Length: 146
Image 1: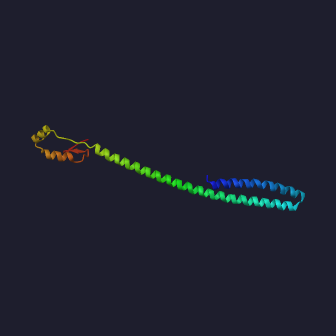
Image 2 (image 1 turned 30 degrees about the horizontal axis):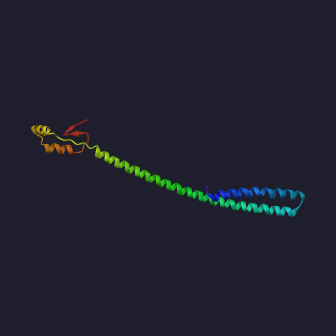
Image 3 (image 1 turned 45 degrees about the horizontal axis):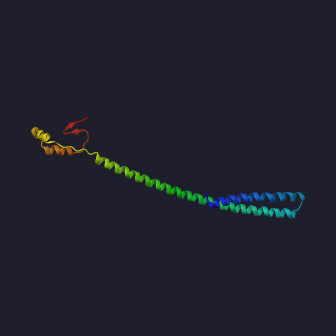
C-alpha cells in the first residue's frame, strides 16, 4: 500500500471520528436552546468534514498511484516471462538441431560387400549415391518397404 493511501485513510477516519464530539455538543446546545454554541459546534463539524474530504482525495490519489505501479510491475513481469519463454524455445530448437546431428547414422560398405556388389553387377559408386539419399521409409533401391 502506498504511503499516501495509508495517510489518507488514517486522516479521514480520524477526522470523521472527531466529528462525533461537536455533533454531541450541538445536540446538547439545541436542547438548551443555545444558538451560539450550536453555531460553533457546526463550525467544528464543517472543519472536520472538510479535512476528512481532503484526506479522502489524498487516499484516491494514493490508490491511483498504487494501481499505476501495479500495472508497471505486471508489465515488467510479463516481459520477463516472454523473454524466458523465447530463451527456452531457442534452447529447445538448438537441442533439436544437436539431436538431429547426433542421431545421423552412417553406413560403410566393407571390402567384402564392395566385392559382392561388383559380382552382382552394381557399381559401388551407384550404391553409395543411393544410400546418401534421404530416407523416406517407403522405398529402398526400388523395393517398397513397410
